[in-house]
Image (cartoon, rainbow, N blue to C red; front, side, top):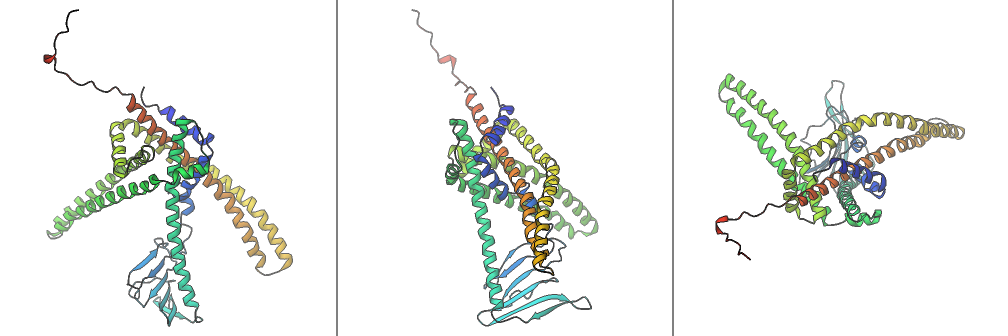
Length: 411
């Protein structure tokens, strides 16, 4: 009996609709990974006015929380310690908070004069205001770091819980609760997942950094050889570049498969980091056809999912406008009876926008969670099926030397 694709997909679909405790961990993955619609929700394309947060440390180095898109006209917020960031190139709209505790504080804004040249305008602020802004910026940077760490922990714990809960259900038929799933996910395997991703990611990044650096060597050598040699070097380097990009796509796909199977080897077989990677590689190498076709099925899902979500998004947009607009109009009317000016508009926006986002975002995240459950369950079922196939293959009999055999005695 070979690898049964239909069984894998059928059991994964069964997990989605019959094992509701998995939904919680699917939603966690949808919110903490780069899967759609989480990518859509985190996209900053509509936030064209937001810049980066740059904090210059006392030792002269800096920490930057990026937010600027290419061509973005929004400004950065720069906390300039002891004027150490004065040498950087600024943009229009940048706000520079210069400070040297405990006495020196100032705020300057980068603007343009009538001739179009950049200039600094110093703002007159109350004593203590700059210190409060600096403290707020530091607190914001710390909060962002904490959120990133918490999201990473939630991701690996949720993924571990999904894998182990599906495997336990297949083995025992018992459905675990959400709390039991959390206990299954909070384990050494979750931390090993992080180590697996880190080891594979750093190794791949280092290898391709060296590869792209080596590609520049022919161009550098050709610079000394004149115009003709330079032209040949440019063509040769360009060809190598596109070849390296293609190789990066292929290797990236292969490494994604390796990581999925290595995680399951870690979670289900209790292997360490290197042993899990070796086990995942062995399964890919020994079952290349089965793993490849499973990946094609999942790739089709990833490509078809956004197109399938288009009508749902339009439906949710319509529902959001309706369910968010009606309370906003009601709030506007009631606020207009009590006060005038712009207050009713602000009240309407405060009521309507959260209702609109609630109607739009919550269903998208939930559907993304269901997709994560299906994808994770599919790979877990595939791993179990591949292990089963390996266990059913007959082991080769040891070869024997016929010349050393003796005739059986005659009874």
